[in-house]
Length: 168
Image (cartoon, rainbow, N blue to C red; front, top):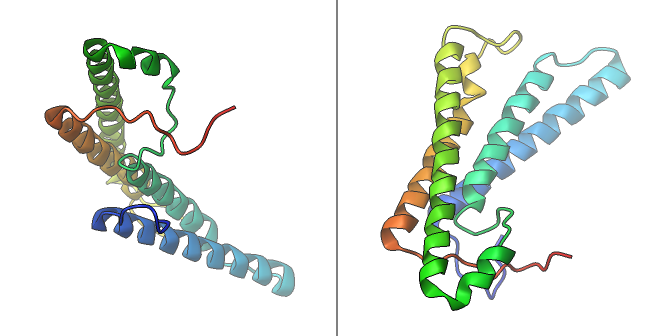
């Protein structure tokens, strides 16, 4: 979350953080209840494992999409940082990095879309939910990050090299 010295998060980012918290809470309660029922009473909730897996996948991809605008993804900026004194080379490297991220989003989105289409006709064993719900967050994440990258390319936003944590 935000500390007092950080600017307020965008409403979509706050919504993603809230959804991640809800996913985590439901996962924790579901698994805890299942453990108590299994070891305490000899029976469990069959849907707990499928629900936890589904929510975990959604939480991971929501987190990936929410982390991108905050600059919280892993970045190797040592080489690009050396180009800072050469503005044209720095801009070219920034554009190249953004185009590579966009390519990764296209590849992820294409593969996820294929899995969503395949999953529309099948259902999970216990929950009976469409199997397309598992790859859907990857598709949505690819679209969201891809849109943010395109916006950064259009606005010619400079690459942020100032990470909050030093890597050793």
